[in-house]
Image (cartoon, rainbow, N blue to C red; front, side, top):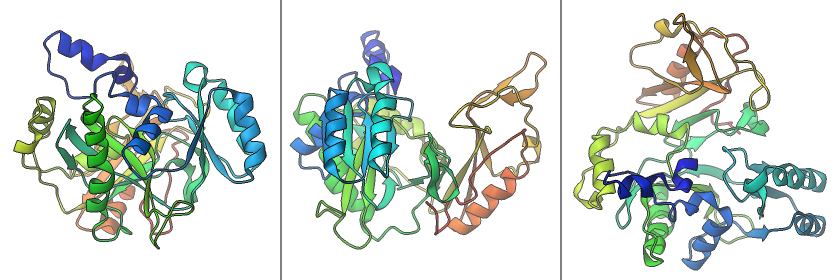
Length: 356
């Protein structure tokens, strides 16, 4: 996300190199939450109510007078840790202080109504005009089982959502994904790359406080992590052909096929993540993983002697596929248990029907 907002794609294209991703101007879709929400409002895309503050004291005054639960966010990019879900006024005031201390990312703050609804990730390829949706997926952000603890960059993903009603994918494409692409094109900033909104879905009808069944709460301008791991293992088509077509404005010419199998990704993290954690811990057991299970390396490195050790907060993503979500889940956890490093932490409820 950072290189896109710095203008990486613009520089590559200026050098005559084709690039799959949004321009610096289009990457504002993720780089500024306030800009994204204003774009959604201008083009009638359903989204959560958002107030914008350039002054921390004004944000505090709003919280003191709001008398409701809110989500406080840094407007800029904060490595996936710029949103704090609060339950009390005191928590919200602390969140304002914490995010204001981030520097440029927290110079502007947004405060949104906290909504109780299911969340779904809706990725799509875009060439600026044509949008091709990927299967829906669900990310688990909280560090502990049941949705407890602070938010992380993602502790696991499952796809497709077991709870999604028939037609939800088409509704999201028609009311959210295509209107975002159309709106950006109309405003002279065509989006080429991955559009990835996070969406609240109310199973029982209109979502709390808005009269909408679906609402965008954030928009990203690239693949989610670990959503990409769970999605791309289901892609039957040639990814290179898709991204080449998108980069050249010809996405409408490409057929796209996805496996009907379900996928589950379980993240193995360092003890203490998303706070302080140790690195350099030996990793063993990878040779015991089933050949049809993918292990994606997120925070690992090789020592000069060739040993594999931990090098980050989220260390590995173990991804399994199977005809049913339950079978994919069982296979993923079976293989997680074969991998070891000191203090390894992972959620045990990824994909469960009682998950948080």
